[in-house]
Image 1 (cartoon, rainbow, N blue to C red):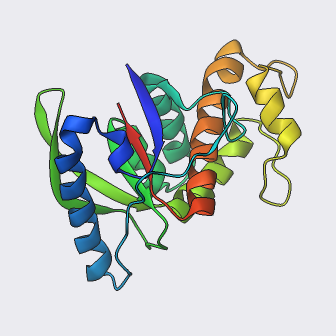
Image 2 (cartoon, rainbow, N blue to C red; image 1 turned 180 degrees about the vertical axis):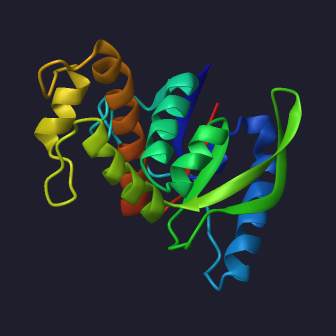
Length: 199
């Protein structure tokens, strides 16, 4: 199964399910209000972050749900990574908002996933980006002053190794999934919108 990355929340739902998106936005705003943050306003239409076929600097705007779970699990094994834990536990519906939440929060909104009603969580784009930065070192991804260079992003897209002995799983799966997550979070933060993962 594949998980897509969407700018905003409504765009991650089909046209006939947009009412669910409104319910999720409302549930997220209840969390934000309880933590003294301004309400999140989902843009309609969402910002276009594509440059040709590229999702920012990533060749992918989606990835295997299994690989995303494995990458996020790897991050949570390194250190306390509460935002990556959201991806590990449910890459099929999770939202990261442009608010500096101290930690992720469970919303009152639930969605049927694999036959079960699952509570949907909301995290922070800043938190996700910070944790992806920690994970970069473990994946052998060069980071300069906390930033991913265009050259590094291009090398990931081209499946280039960064060090001798890099496995194909690392090159083709983990690093490309990391870049898609990173670009999604970076682009959403720059646009001031939520990043939604949906599968």
